[in-house]
Image (cartoon, rainbow, N blue to C red; front, side, top):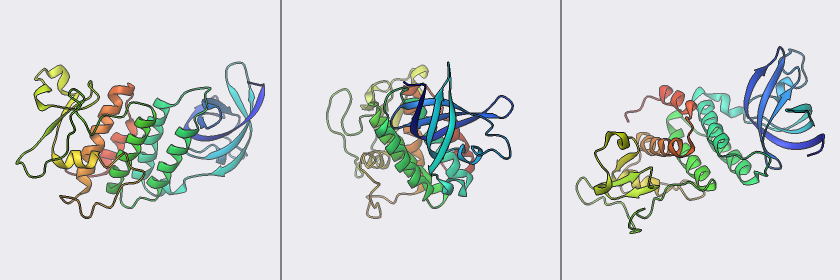
Length: 267
């Protein structure tokens, strides 16, 4: 890479650096994930200050130092002001940013990840109540995992390859879900070993039904679903995918815990 270059970028993380600078973690469709210093960005009269906010999108002009790029100029291209409308939306956006950080590659084009993340941030920005975020977050996380090649198998058994569909007729019908195996598994496979119990789940028909809606481009209208869908149902599905993602990516999405503390739903 040349000593100076330009890159489009979405700011995913910001932290103080030195006395007045900021250290930014930026996702770029052209160059992937990179860190850059924003000189003087914490000063009151800094031209960079307002352009270094979380989720700001800029055309960055950078100079490459020995170990860290330095932002020479930033031309604003967009932002997500609606994420600041509620603490819940902001936490949801940070949650997706943390997931993207776990998946992004450095010094490699990340156009698909960049576009996907921006699309889902727009959906989070336009959500209604904070309790409505869980369905959007569940789908966003599934799409991110699919792009990263680690999405769970939600249509067939991971062990037998038999199709599994939700059974709303059989009383107390359930199927298994195993993180280690990568998705759906027979109930008989779920062992009693407490060391593995945190990586296993029992899913009811409503859980599986909602899981199988996630691969689509957008969530469908579920007004005619076999059973009424409430925010707490989406919360169960999102929590399942969150735990699965944290297991496979080796990361903890701390912003999701903040969201849970804000939204009072019976799990």
